[in-house]
Image (cartoon, rainbow, N blue to C red; front, side, top):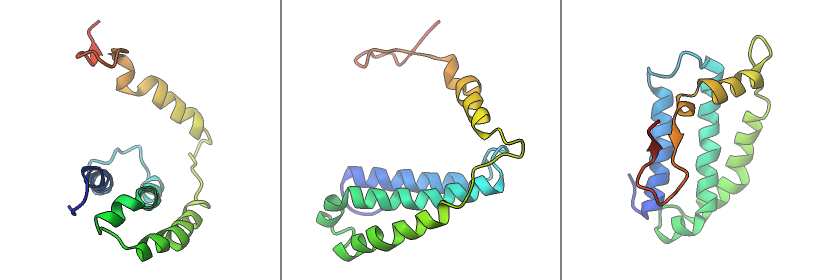
Length: 128
């Protein structure tokens, strides 16, 4: 980990954990090789976007220089977007969005839980 604010360290951990999860042998079998490659490519623009969005924090902690930020904004993001843009998300049966909707709305185990709608409540999940 690097020096800086708690928020910077949290953002670093998000990126690092995402990267490690993609490298893990436990990646779901439903993800084909193309999806994994795309997720690796999407990780980079996210990190660069975070760097640009929180530039003042990164500058003040000397984590990056102004030059690093300029390069990220002008060259790296555009190059990564060009790499990602032509990559289609597809399924062999042509029903990508139907499958994504069905997974999110019906198969996600979180849909079986009733979440307490009151933010000040100490109960996160309500018992049936």
